[in-house]
Length: 75
Image (tube, rainbow, N blue to C red; front, side, top):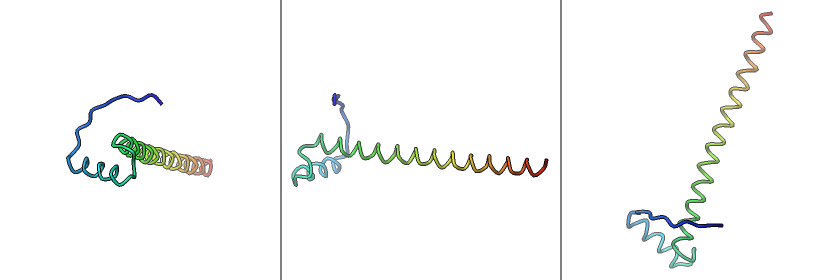
């Protein structure tokens, strides 16, 4: 995977936490820890967005069925 270098300003406490994760061996380096955090954030947020869209589509579909049933009863 092609990588791009970016600069990010972080609160010192975040950096200390990342350093601790590297120091204890959870991650080989800060970059990998940050990549994993961003990947997990994107997965979670995009999954929630997709779930929300799917729920909205379900509601619209149910409403459409209700409207059709109501219209058929009127005929």
